[in-house]
Image 1 (cartoon, rainbow, N blue to C red):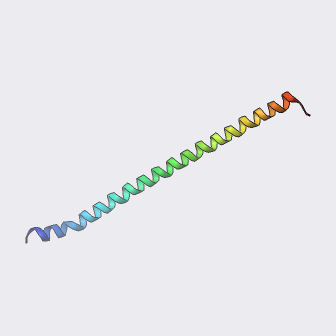
Image 2: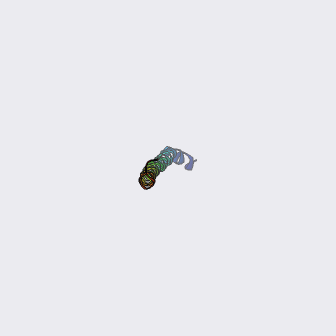
Image 3: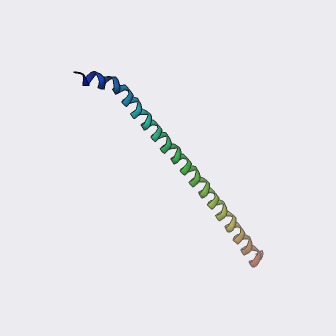
Length: 69
């Protein structure tokens, strides 16, 4: 009988602690995923920009080397 009221007094603290840790874990995970996706997006857009730049450079070089037809 003495254990259960003590446990019920501590139960909201445990529940709050569990929810806070869960929320913090989810927030950290989501923010890391967001940072990861933005990093990947920036990397991919830079790769796409470099690809466009190099393909344009090679296309111009091809036009200059072959000459206007």
